[in-house]
Length: 208
Ligand code: 3PG
Image (cartoon, rainbow, N blue to C red):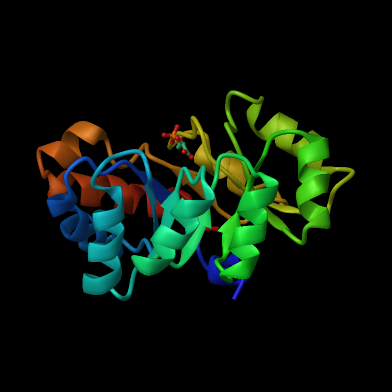
């Protein structure tokens, strides 16, 4: 299954930084409860790989992916930990080769027309557009998409509750990613009740 197929019924993907793996399962259960079906756990902390494994094992209803992929070895590691998809802020030849070799659904990142075209030629029809807001947000995405209508995007970076619906209105956007509904402080405090409220609100505004 490729990433387009895997994420076809997903509108919003929480992009999370997990500092403490013991919060991972409760977070995944909270998100599921709020109606969120996929999570991207970024490889930016020492606990990230364990967090992926814990969620994959304990919350099978949640589609768990790994984000911030930078190195080939990380793709093999996340496969062993049970990740179902991988996301990178960009793309390199070795990452693409490895993702294909291990059949990992992969969402590579692109920010320019040339990068989008290169990934298209590699068969990647769903691409992360990153960092979305800093690149000009929906206006830039609309302009890039006009001559490249076949490609679908998963924008992330700077998206807020206010901006989210504008992205999902674009035909070229199939889902968006963001961290606005899981503030770091709430996760550290294990305030899952508040995270659930914010996640429910995120599901509501991204319901298209
Ligand atoms: C990412 O890695 O996709 C971004 O860091 C997520 O962006 P946000 O934290 O600005 O929502």
